[in-house]
Image 1 (cartoon, rainbow, N blue to C red):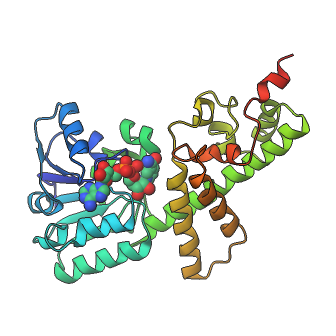
Image 2 (cartoon, helix red, strand yellow):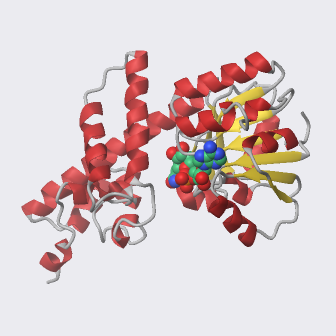
Length: 314
Ligand code: NAD
């Protein structure tokens, strides 16, 4: 396919990719939530946006279809639902790109069913990182489940490049998801470790600003500590400094962490911190003081002193 004339977007939530896609093609969009659709209709100034009544209709009318929904069950509904799912229409020669963070088993199942029924269609996993700000500013990172030599790579780079800054072909099918889950497993653990270490320090009487500065020049340095520090008041722009509002919800971290632990089990990769990390995010997701807040709320979950500043005023 050279340049697609029509693009479809299914799933218009926080990460809804439609926001910064190119304005040169006809766009066909659908979300199961009528509220999401009418919000979008009232906000967009674009003329070539067509609201569809199902995922099937989006697929019928688009050459390339992007999907961005919360979990594997939603991806199965969008693609496989017999009456109105994407697969209930002819997908010959179409390109389908799922950007949701889901389990690799669901992604492979959807890919196999598509290729089985429509051998000329192609399906890619392309999860993202960068959060709501990245989606709004078109600065997302895409982890693409394809090799560098994939026949569609130029087109994918061009389309994803309108929504993101970095596009990494990860080598083949499902490996985009694998990269995403490895990243979130690692950053989830760094957040817990940073929160625990800062908590030890504050409880022992050290000013957390001093400790964070030491981390930034020592071996505990990380983006989490430098930019997303779990202790309120260390990074003024971080969610922790705004009552953990915004950012990456703790429930999403629980989901991704659990998917990473499952992936490890499937490939026989030994984890020593997996259970502890998962239990932490599961418990924090249930804690009324933490639910719906940025995942770095683990500092609060640990009982960290959020009013440490009063101790260090003089
Ligand atoms: P969201 O809940 O804000 O939006 C999901 C949208 O999908 C909703 O509008 C919902 O109505 C729609 N939807 C659900 N089922 C549907 C169906 N069957 N048909 C059509 N639409 C349907 O979620 P989000 O934050 O946009 O996250 C989407 C994906 O992106 C998730 O897999 C998440 O893990 C991943 N992600 C999120 C972030 C973040 O910071 N929010 C960052 C990176 C990746």
